[in-house]
Length: 252
Image (tube, rainbow, N blue to C red; front, side, top):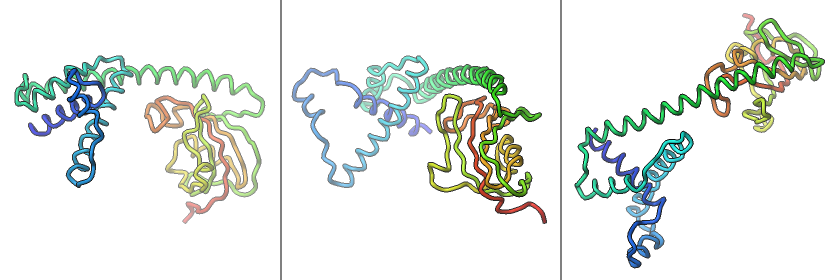
């Protein structure tokens, strides 16, 4: 545990040391630090990779704290690293662990606060969008709140919630950002209707093979308060869906 904590603190400082100019004004020392690194032996490559991974971790942390408006004192962090390497750290391992936990808690609190605000904004925007969208000609709303448009009719039996279907689809956020598309992947998706979001389970059962629909799915019929990929909590989603075929029925 102690070794891990020390390694984390040292790694953070090492990464930041590469992100800013050194305080020393010594020309020879400056030139040595700026000189290209030789990466010929396995030991050199491994050492560089370890340092680079530490730097990447620290840079990600810096970016996260900057986004949340939290200060990150780089010179002091570097000083802490140097002191630890020299065996002169001003805190015990236990104290360092407590302080880093406090920093983590502050960051997580800010992130949660921002996520809550975004979720509330998404909910309000989704409700306004659906209320206005429902007024458009050709848009139908089911009892659950799912809205759909028939872009192209199909023929044949509609699937049930127990069936497996093959579809092509494109999903976007309300601002038009595409977050998923089988068209982009160049391959249709195959899945049981019982294992997708509620808006899909309901909507696909309205379609016959060959049909193309556009679904406007309220967040409660999509991912709700969960975030996944580019989809943030309480997001209303828009899907263009083409039912290619019912590949397997749930009937025994």
